Length: 320
Image (cartoon, rainbow, N blue to C red; front, side, top):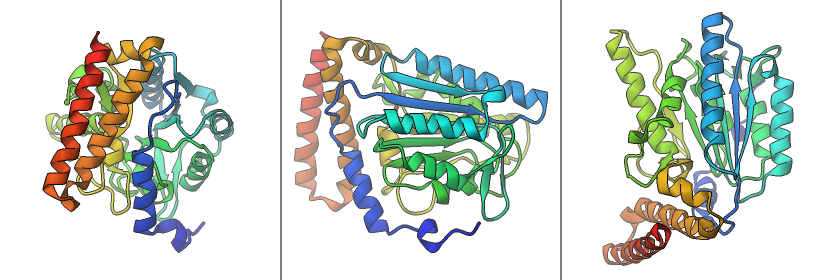
C-alpha cells in the first residue's frame, strides 16, 4: 500500500503549533489516568519468545506498582494477535480522556519492505499504518509509542501525530537484525540512576538516553558492529538520537514512572493536586527552555525565575 504525500509529510507549522499546545496542556485533573499497552510479539524461536515475554511481564509489574491511576494491558503468547491488539486499543479509545496519558510498547520482531513496516504477531502481522490509525482514535493528547523491534525505524513516518512521541530501536527500516534495546528500556525503569535530574521520576527521554547508552555498551563489550541505532521523534523533522531544537520537548516531559516521594504523593489523595501542579510547572519550565533561543534574555530569565520559585514552593508543600 503506497502512502500519499499527505501521510508522509505534515506541515511543520501546523505540527509544531499543535505540539506546543499539547506540551503546555495544564494538568488540571489530578486523577488523570495513564494507559499502558505492552505487546510481546511473535518470537519465532524459543529463545526470543522467552525473552520477549519476560520483558513484557517485567514492564507489566513495573507499571502496576506505579500507582492506582495506571491501567495496564499486556498481550503475550497466544493473546498477542492483531485482533486482540485492535480490541485492546479500541477499549483504551473508549475509556481514556484527553487529559490521560497513553503508552504503547511493542517488543519483538518487525519487517520492512521499503514501503510498509509490520510488527510480527501470532497470525497476521499488523502494519504501521494500522497501528497509527488505532492510536489516532485514542483521545489522549499526550501519547508515547515505543517500538523496540527490528526494522522499527521504518514505522516513524506513519506513526507521527501531533502530541505523540515515538521511540524506535532502529534508525530505519533497513536495520533488520534482532534488537536488544527492549532489554535496556526495561532496565531503565528498574534502575533509579536513570533519573538523572533527580526529580523522583523517570521521563521517556531519560529512559531513552539510558537504554541507548546501555545498548551501545553491549555491542562494544561483545566486540560486535552495532546493528541497531535507536532514535526518537516528537516533532516535525527527521528522527534524532539527542534532544535539540524542537525535538525532545515532549519526550522530556513524558513521565513514565514516579519514584520515591513522588510516587508516595501519587498514592496520597491529599497530595494529588500538589503533585499535578508540580508536574505542570516542570513541563512549563521545559517548554520555556526550548523557546529560549527566540526570547528576549531578560524576559526568559524573569519567567524562568518565577516558575522555579513556584516549583520550590510546591515541592516544599509536598515534602511536609
